[in-house]
Image (tube, rainbow, N blue to C red; front, side, top):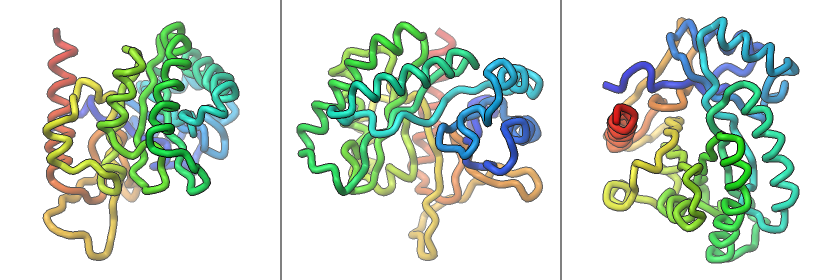
Length: 258
């Protein structure tokens, strides 16, 4: 069983109300960690000041652990603009005591870069961002996107890029949906993925009418309010991913105690 304090709630689960309603939902579910998003119609903070959001979070006893996301972070041609955008996100993160920024790679059919060039530009971007993350004390979480048009589909490649960047401020996001659609097999993950690089596990749904067995359904809900948690909950996914999430939780807990 994954401890309750290892769970977080993504803003996508309940985007309708303002941020106060989202914090209230997390509190009702006894979930003390949340992920905010910059693609929400109201922006990251719903038009409120950082001081107001910080006060609301404290009142509901929740902590913002991530802001999702700096998009297309690994496009070399956009690197100067990406640095400026990242500086703004880091400023917001620091103002509300947020721990990390999600970094999403380019995923577009118009991206004509080869796999090798995309990988080199991923490493270059991480090297360029590293001083900004280190100065702020905020971490960067690299999230591979499993779809075929993505420039960084494999969590194994993401880990290799982090190693080559030399940045201790970087971790990976392991997303169950993107694992399902991506190139990494369960066997590859078990043999090659170092869970010390796991900053966050997005457990998101893969829902099909003919989803093959065996699958397991887990939900976090409050009355009719149901949705995805950021650490360990989904609509349906293979049992191996449940084992992986538990392994990450055990490893993280062990490292925290040392």
